[in-house]
Image 1 (tube, helix red, strand yellow):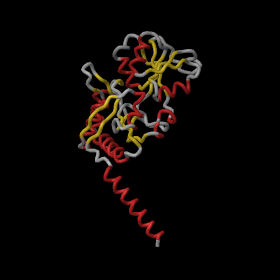
Image 2 (image 1 turned 90 degrees about the vertical axis):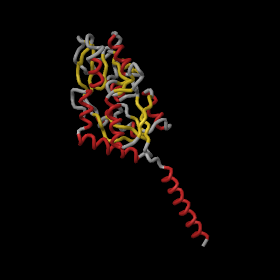
Image 3 (image 1 turned 45 degrees about the vertical axis):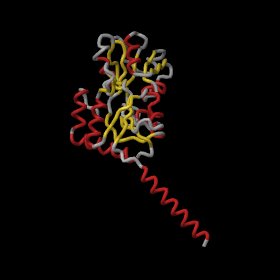
Image 4 (image 1 turned 60 degrees about the vertical axis):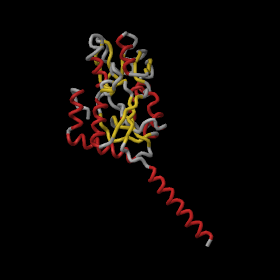
Length: 258
């Protein structure tokens, strides 16, 4: 009889705990979005310290679709996942590739961007991007990105220089302190059409390595927040089907981003 009573008590405790957990689950009527604010044209802080860019417009549109209130939080890239895990915000929308390595710490929504990867350099730079040709060359990348991981793996005989932001890498190439940069094509295209138009050019395209680059860019959430992940995924998929994704993408990009 005592064993039976203990079983009933344990079952009741488990049920109560489950009910408590369900009662405490967020309803996701208000969502905080973390972004870098230094990766144009995806996300950027303008001169008035206002967020702008494709991801800002796109995520705001997703929030309208989901009928939720969203607020933005700006976070340096190198601390963007730790800040999510410490609940500074609820989802990351910041040009983050959904890699297997990151999936050890966070979950990802459906992919909303998948674009080519470029190498750029001075206008007279060699277009031979083989590891042997780039031996001893200085290659700039944004730190803690798939591009830095790729460069470290492939160009072991080169000098890989990680930067806190893409803009800092771009400026060092502009000032002759780098030989090449590897990054997302759309971010580099923005630079080549602006500050870098007189100095620099695309020298080649990097073949995506699925093990490093993953399937594309997606929103990142804490592993326990499956409902939030699914909520955003459904909105992303709807936006792709109804054309609202393309409408916003066409405002910023000349090439398809999916």
